[in-house]
Amino acid sequence: MGAVRGTEVEQFCDYLNRRGLKLTSQRMRIAETVFSAHRHFTSEELYTLVRRREPLVGRVTVYRTLEHLVRSGMVEELSIVKGVSTYEHTAGHVHHDHLVCDSCGRVEEFHSDPLEHAKRRAAEERGWRPDRHLLKIQGLCPDCLARAGSAGPKA
Image (cartoon, rainbow, N blue to C red; front, side, top):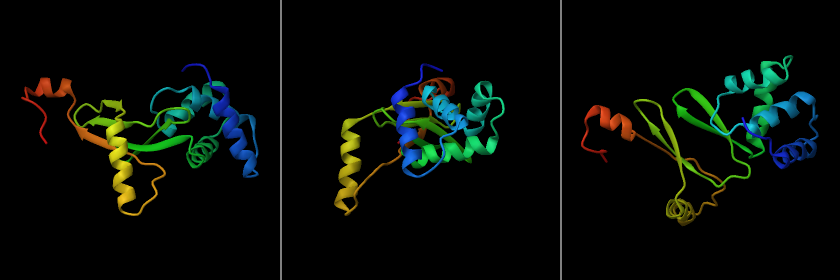
């Protein structure tokens, strides 16, 4: 966990305020914990991290606050492993996509301007106004390919 970026927490406080939702100390700790996390995390991992700073916080409070963070557009919910929601904060970050290894579960983030333009163009050509998107490419990472003795990735 790194230093908390105050502007992100302030933006979330503004989001709560605009919707008439209470700004509690527990919600503040949850937001601070999320914005100091520089990795993907599950709701259960977040609960464990928050409990270190706010021992009396309830699981439901963490889950509901996480839902508000997602609705605010500051946190993205991903499905990296089937059946498990994974989250990452996106506020203040350039959009990126994910490569996921089907063998070891390794997740690698990447950004590609040409791919971003192609995704936007594809949506707009169909009459859509894209607001956000998620792209996950699944396959085998270089380490698993090497262990399998494979000659290279299959298309």
